[in-house]
Length: 216
Length: 390
Image (cartoon, rainbow over all chains, first blue to last red; front, side):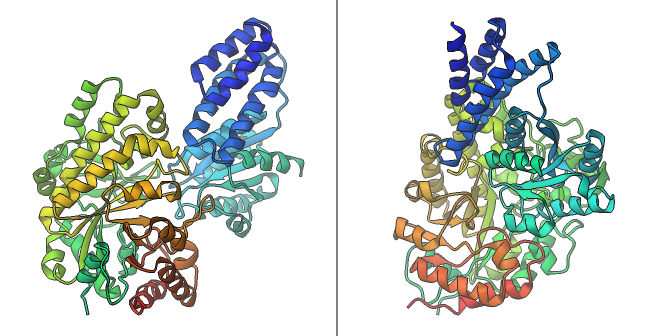
């Protein structure tokens, strides 16, 4: 398979969400000498962005998004390992600690946002689900994170996003980290009310929001 | 004038009534709060005590139905709630450990299964970490169901899951509509943490193991009919399931059509055969599948409130489905019922009833949430009861 064809197929298989084939193509790309940075930026990222757009237009559904995110991640891991081996640093867009708040075990939305952020070059520290404020904040401090991203899928767990922000204030580090919130019941109104720096309606917008917060 | 039971049954059978019935979601934790009880303590640990909670709540608010949840197994009695690493667990009393082993609803492959059940407080003990199914072949699925899921109606009754019902039936069964509302088999399979597959694996299985997934779903729904039989024997009037996780805002509507529609049709028909009224709460964006839902033998559909990704307007829903099934209202439980004024609630009740036009039951779109002012719930119920069909 010619290099150009490998690149095109990488793009197509992220779109179709073929995990095994995408992984295989990534390995092939490396063996054929494809620049891993170029593969990420020119093929994986545009493909996953298109997936996000299709999801927004309801042409794709959550299983499609998940399959594409998994496929992309399989290739991303291979390319990043290669970049690391070569001693080149992939320029980080910023460090983000991300998790689902305490009392809430919903993972998928948060994981998709994390995968997209990672694809876009953010250094993502995923602290998982059912996360208490201590874990969020300690991780922010330890990693010197630029952004803290919190997800909540339940109306009864939304208030915990506010509790974490309050705790950041108490510890005197609220101005050291940007806070973004999301999740099915979360709205811009809620984000404003609890003093978050940003809110995104979906995974693609969450990446745009993170990029814009990094510029502030 | 019809009593509450007659009113609900006529409405569900698409007949005319004098006034519009009001049946809010009150199967969740709000009932404890409204009665000044701590749900984390002991009010739910025995069927009889649970029954008292329901009766007190009913007497306080007088809606047109009892909206009961799945119930409580006998072995929860005398259990202790312990905290480990910030999480709550139920420690089953020694005398009930043998009984616990027989309960497949709380079956788990955890080594500590015999004495401890994970108890996230918002789940109210209705779930635990279930074993994971291997869909690689039909025999494995059959073995799994036999080992971890199958309970006969008699076993369900003996386990205590219907113990909250008899007192309510004997006292109110002639006058008030009594419904049990339980999570559907899909919920048991797809629950992100506790399900037999989990959410991500569940969705992927439609693609990776289509034949086996369909078979597993069929078998799980078949097994769940035992629960309907048990509640029918206990004397309830209706069996409600909550369908979630594969709504069209999450999964492609074709998944529903290909995997679930025929299962639902047979399932709801069988529930009717037990003398129960089948009702389904279709969570998420129901609009793309409205026609399909109405073709499943279900007698009424409950909808959640509009969310930022979809709009569930009762008038539009009525326009779309006509008189095929009864429709429940979907007042917003958070931004209106909890945070709105009594006047705003009354106005929305009137608006939804006008939009629905007929065969409509006033309700909110999801369980009443903690911190909802009592006056707001009363406004929903009383302003609804004041409404008559023109």
